[in-house]
Structure formats: structure tokens, C-alpha cells
Length: 105
Image (cartoon, rainbow, N blue to C red; front, top):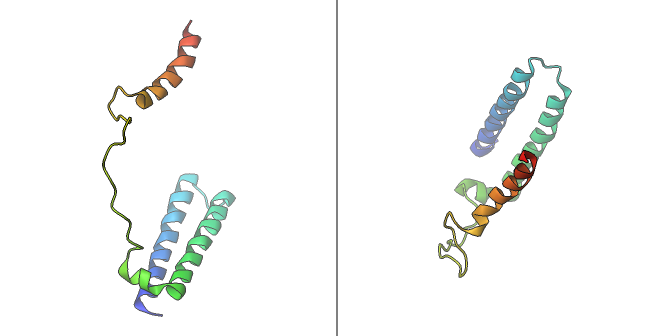
């Protein structure tokens, strides 16, 4: 087991410990089948991914980043507005105020 795999397994152990704490401390009991089911499904998928990548693509794990993304453009599109008075910022207000105004009368 190389250093990278060993570190990944230690991280998985830490993740499992934190998940158990976060799920079962608020429940107040280990007799919480939904929590065990969540841990089983979540942890098995994370374990599968952790075991897959060192075998199939170890170079991507060594660099710590995936493929480079193209730079984002910060130019506003024609006709778009991000000011507080724009239509898109008023839609949630209209959607909320409509039913509320009917219930008040």
C-alpha cells in the first residue's frame, strides 16, 4: 500500500467516524436503522470511488486537480441586468406576495 492509498484509507476512517457521530448523537441511540442504511450506501459509494481512481488514473490523484477549465468570462450579456430592480429579482417577491395578499383580504 503506497502513501497515497494509506492517506485515503485514513481519510475514509475519519469520514466514517464523523458520519457516525453526526447521525447517531442527535438520534441518541445506535438503534437507528435509517442512519445505518445511509452510512452503508454513502460509505460504499465513497469507498468504490476511492479504490477505483488509484488503479485507473493515479496521475490525477497525484496532482490534486482535474482537467483545467477554460477561464470564465465576466462580460454581461446584451439585455441582461443584474441590478436590484431587474425583473429576475422581482419574480420571487411577486410569487410570494401574490398568495399572501389574497389570504389577507
